[in-house]
Amino acid sequence: VVICLSSESLPTSPTYCLNMASNGTWTADELMHGKAGDRHDEPTASTSSSPAKGGRRFSTKKLKGKGASADPMDWGLPGHLTDEEVAIFMKFRDEVEKRGGEFKNTVYSFGDIEGEAFCLTRWLRARKFKYDDVISMIEEATEVRADARKHDFYPDPSEALGCEPSVFQAQYPQLYHGHAKNGCPVFISKPGILNVDGMECITTLDGILKFHWHVMMHDYKMRLLKHKEAHPNFTRFECVVVIDLDHLSTSQLSQRALSIVKTQTAIDSVCFPETMNRTLVINAPRFFSMTWSIIKGWIDPRTAGKIELISSRKNWESRLRELVDEEQLPSDYGGKGMATTETLKKEAPEGVLQQHHELVYVRTSGHCSVDVPAGGELEVKVFSRATTEVTISVVDDNDKTKVYTAAVAFKHTGGTDENDPPTSMVITTQRIAGPVKARVKIESKGSRFSAAGNYMVACNIYGK
Image (cartoon, helix red, strand yellow):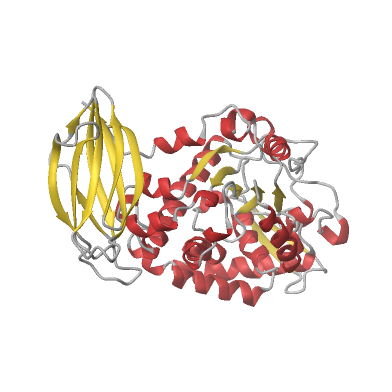
């Protein structure tokens, strides 16, 4: 069906002909005032709506300012556009179709299933409906993602990182856990316990970048698509983010730590715009709270309005339960779902029952111990960038004369640039059967007046 819509308020043309086929194209009037028979409500502190019960809903009320919403969180969404914004939308849509190819693939990075109106307005909101700025942004994003696209956005996370994801997650816990009441995936990040020295032992900034491409295009994307298939009215391809700053200290805010965070956010800001639905920063130490009060004044009011800083556990648990059903919320965050520590254990390689990761600093010698239960078999792998030669052995922690793995020589043989991969080696020539308490010993072969460096010991306990 083709509808020809005339409107004196749309500046680029007096008539718009829009194909209203089953692909969900919106008319100009609907972009301003919503689709007939639908409503739009966002969960708030006092009210909430679940897509599973009522689906995605859009306002039919004639909004203030010729379609503009009084709620800043609704600004730029389909059903809440002004006549000028509709005109830019139409021009943008035509340009996307005309260019096609990788330009269009960049725009529809999550696939056509997101829906034309919701996908295009995401990009338009990111640049406040300034047409030339939006086009420039997409051109930049197309270039940024070009190399990752050649590698299919790194479908193998271990290959991307250069280590098992579970080793990475042990140094910087980050995970998706369920969905919020509005259907958005819930992402929990724990930068307060980020181990920068451990990260440096196992991967590179380039590896972290590749892994982030994997997460966005093979993990986050699939979560969105699966939820959309189960809940066809779900339209907000966004994420509810929880940033847990528990244990954060000023010493952790090093240039290396900030580089890791910056590496991940740089991709999102240009290639996945407007995918933050809401962010809760919890357990913030006093020094961060004081800094935030200054930073907030520099941020766009609409963006700042999406970020909540809550230090009191009682208050942030209450707020999380307003946004997320208890069954979807981890038990260590005030819900009834699986604890984040248990969810992260699922990242372990197939067949692994338990894992133990420990950063060992070696001056002349160092060690770590691990309990291997009955029925378990221990495998030890070591990662490092240290160029001093060391020997690594595995002995019985209670009887040092009992040797399970004789001393083997180890040192980093690669380059020293931050993007040169670290060296890794499986130390155990054969798995060590439990029950036993094993000690991994690292002894330097260098001068006793200089430190050997840091070594990440990754222990996997397999079932027999």
